[in-house]
Image 1 (tube, rainbow, N blue to C red):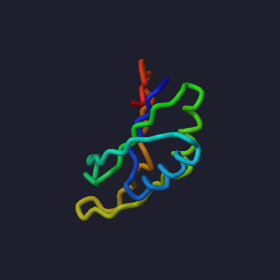
Image 2 (tube, rainbow, N blue to C red):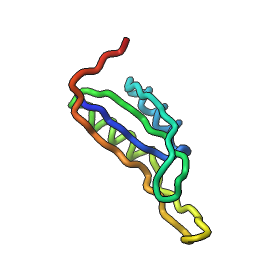
Image 3 (cartoon, rainbow, N blue to C red):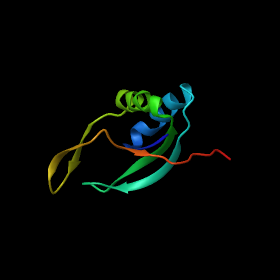
Image 4 (cartoon, rainbow, N blue to C red):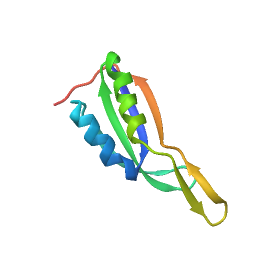
Length: 95
């Protein structure tokens, strides 16, 4: 099992979660803030079998978008589409 932690832009979160649900993957959504521009993000926690990791990553790649943001001090700044961590998971239980 793996834990996929995906930090995505708020604008993309609904589309990603809907696509995950269509493929029978469940995700826990957490509001998060951080990064270069300190903008709000959504962190998704997704527990998956090892063989499903690439499918989940493909869904995130297909739905997450890079955006150009204006910051008065720095000018135009490109925001990453997503930051994703895949971590070995010793146990996963849905209670």
